[in-house]
Image 1 (cartoon, helix red, strand yellow):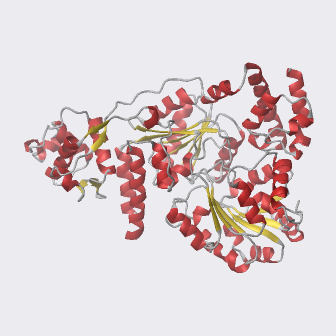
Image 2 (tube, helix red, strand yellow):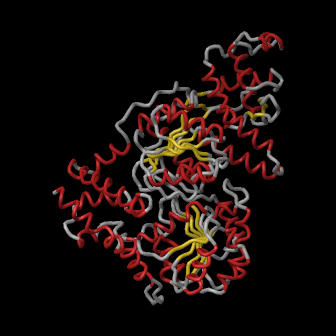
Image 3 (cartoon, rainbow, N blue to C red):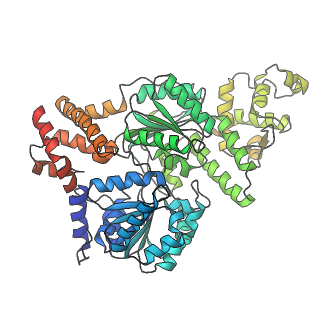
Length: 610
């Protein structure tokens, strides 16, 4: 598996891609990255989820003499990654705390003797004297640092042990290193390069665009009911992920989905390890399951047919949102990123920042990231444009997000914003949103009477608008920077310096016109609509039969169904209808090992149905 590198690295790399992994050609910058690393160069790779990052280190490891070491932050996913490589004939293993001492000794022996192509280790294990000594006494072909954004102290997935990985440059100066991530703005990119001593490494930055994902953000009224309506209308019988902020909300939401006929599992760090691992395994291996989780779930999830990712709580940053939504549609088929977002989300996130033990500089960075997230939620323009712009990428309207499909009406909101800001000022900036809105709408409450706020000039000036409409205006006021939410016990609204020119009439304000939430219209399912366009009736029947066969093959091999073949490969087989192994060999995703393992069965199925 480790041929000597000749003059034509590119030809050898393409041969491995086609014969081992079964793909006809490299995508995007994959070929350039593989050649650069195989030739001994260091690299920092930014490539969106589903873009094929793993091939960028797997193929160089097979081209170069020695063992490739992959640093991966999640022990729970190493088994699946190793199983997937075994399915295509690559000799891979992992070293982690789940193994017996005897099994560890066996793997270490394989590393020392070079009888293995790739070994996966967690950063904590890599830093141990025993592991460093193992690699120093072995012939290492490369180091691949996956999920490299974990090195960033400003990021959403910071892992302290990642900072120590600079030791690889110091202890193994002649071994090429490749750091990979799907999520990093320019600041994070610079931090990765600095902390991992990759300043001289060549950087490969692919487009952050995921055109197959439809981004939608709705006003939260009854989050769980809206979630049920969304899944039922657009993703019945699909696999998906629902993110919640708290462990309690995760469990309550999973129960709610199950009670309403949607198969759901829970996942959070507070669960027993065995239960958490079992739920993750079921999600990866079974179809039509919704995983309800905190952000503890998801990094490295390779399940390609996740059709939707939902957020019932506002993410802390665009990086987090992009990373989480990117777990949908890895197979390139249509997928959804849906979020229900309300004023309380903003209040809660502000409070979490203010109450954290971080220093003032770190809190400022967190606040800036939250502001950018609010800007994405409240944008009047294309969401994809706003998302890509955050990562320094320019684009035009996508035509596939909610603001493109149903453009929001932009109105002059100067007067209502002045009324809101005036009301906050008149109540001495000491009250929360609910009370301020009550004053604007002229409500008769005990608190208003107690504080004599019914005597204020702003009392009742907003009676022509509903509470929900005022909440929408208030959210936009926060997103535009005119207001902040204090971290006191009352979540009081405060004016910022930016509010002054608006109050004085020196600055106009454009707002999104309020639209009452509309229940999604029921569709057959995203999968059905996608396949019906792509496949004829007879091809659909073959595809369904192949999926059924695949489930049995996966159970027999003890791997997730997508490790046997992804839906995209089965869909192409259904179209090609191969009558021989030679015809099957040309299908994308069918390498030589899978041809031997499954080819005869597939050809027989096609023959039966023709």
